[in-house]
Every structure is written in structure tokens, then in C-alpha cells.
Length: 85
Image (cartoon, rainbow, N blue to C red; front, side, top):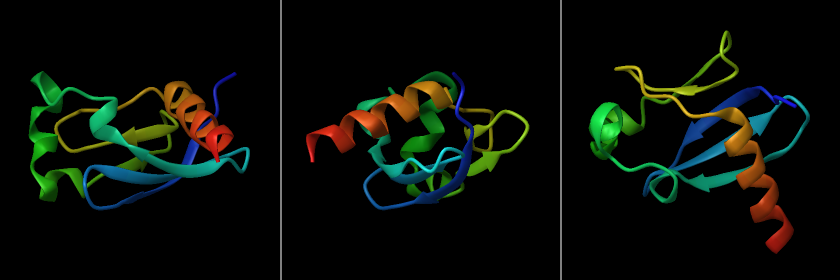
């Protein structure tokens, strides 16, 4: 079931803090999920990476230039990280 992202905060070292509509929240290291190639290549630049925002129509995070990520994948990763702690 798709869980929309409602908040994002860019952190250092290609990390983001996410909050989902169901209350799940946590941090993810995007560099472990994304190869910085193709449409994602500009994200290597910390200034571009920090421009991340929530796209409310898609329910996910996106960056200038069109890079975005699947919110279901991000939700699963946050839940997995929470299960380790």
C-alpha cells in the first residue's frame, strides 16, 4: 500500500529524514539506494541534494531536474532500519 511522504529534511552525507502519512519516520542514506548516474548524477552536488522537496502530487521526494524515488521503497527501508534498533 502506497504511503505518501509528508516531510523531508536533507541532512549531511546524502542522508534524508523522512516522515510518512502513517507516522513512520526515520533517516535514510540515499547513497546506498541511488547510483549517482543519469538523472541522479546532479545529486552528487551537495547543494543540489539539499534542494530535495516533497512532491505532494506524487507523494514522494524529488529534486530539481526530475530525480525522484519510489515512496514504497523508502517506507520499507525506514521500517527495516527501525527493526534493527
